[in-house]
Length: 155
Image 1 (cartoon, helix red, strand yellow):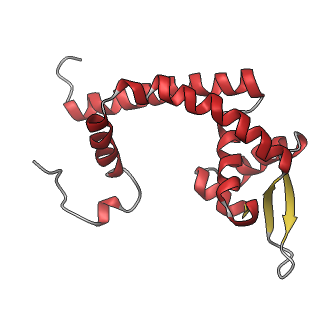
Image 2 (cartoon, rainbow, N blue to C red):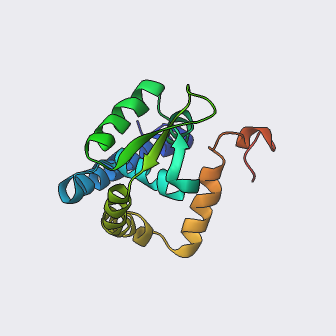
């Protein structure tokens, strides 16, 4: 294993770190707010959207979930009263996920816990310069980044 490529070692470390951090952040949200990390992300996306509503298909795309995955997630949030279904008046086939006042209040409370956890588990472990470099490096992994430049990393 000592002879693994540095890129492969980085990949493994990235996956392990992501898994450990999301598991811890999720557990904190569930314990303190009865809200999963995915549920938190739904509420956050809806809070940032115009009129606090998004088409369910757009929400699924933003969260990188399947249609059935977003349906299951929204069903639980609807039962909790955080989200409600909205209809499109011009096209009955289109449904929206709409953030309720209760959902917004829950998001505001959960955000304090979540942002404190992100600060403790992630932000404080990097200098500003390291964080800026990390942003630049991880941006290369985003969809569309492979179309805009050289085939080889710089340097």
